Amino acid sequence: MPGEDGYFDERVAARYDETSAEMFEPALIEATVDVLAELAGDGRALEFGIGTGRIALPLAQRGVPVHGIELSKAMAAKLREKPRAAEIGVTIGDFATTRVDGTYTVAYLVWNTLMNLTTQEAQVACFANAAAHLGPGGCFVVEVMIPELQRLPAGERFRVFRVSEHRWGFDEYDVANQGLISHHYAAVDDRLEQLSIPFRYAWPAELDLMAQLAGMRLRNRWSDWNREPFTSESAKHVSVWEKAASPADAP
Ligand SMILES: C[S@@+](CC[C@H](N)C(=O)[O-])C[C@H]1O[C@@H](n2cnc3c(N)ncnc32)[C@H](O)[C@@H]1O
Image (cartoon, rainbow, N blue to C red):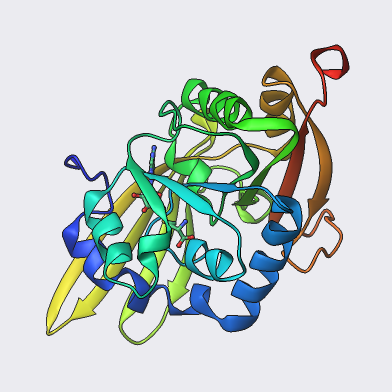
């Protein structure tokens, strides 16, 4: 069972940037920050699950004030070690329920982190919490995978997502409960390290309903940060929901 840092404890935090190298590719970071900086405009950005600052630091370097909510003290400590981290405020807490001061023009939750909330109730609360931090017309942005159900034969539960020299991973689906467990294995210094993280997946339409319950409407849905169209073949979506400008305009 995870401790107070959740699944991103000191052991995971110590190697997070190194083991996530492909997510630190400059082109990906730049495209992500382009979208978020445009939505932030002259306002402030709030990151749910800020981690080690992969997106928050470059966004702050673009001149956008950023605050983060993060469960793991170990991940936040890694962020603190980085140059210019002092510009970013971090509140330790659960992003489904933790409130911070201020109003934001954009709140964002990237790289499948919504799925770390393993109940529908917690995901609904997360959308409500994002909306509560936004001013009128503010946006909530979520980047999350499309579950690989098209590739899962009836009765099958496992999908391999990584096979490389030192690292292997597969997802274990529980279709009836919209659950999946990602199993990660890594050869580290002649040892085999193992980490299994539970997730809850949701179809985009379910997320639209969560947004609607929170007083937000879908503004954009892309298949990536380069704003390519979302299609039946898309492996993930980047969705932007906008908070109503006034209660009378709420969905
Ligand atoms: C996959 S990492 C992403 C980190 C960062 N956003 C990035 O893109 O590199 C997920 C992060 O969300 C945090 N997290 C997971 N569930 C959380 C929750 N309920 N509340 C706050 N943080 C959470 C984890 O501790 C971890 O730092």
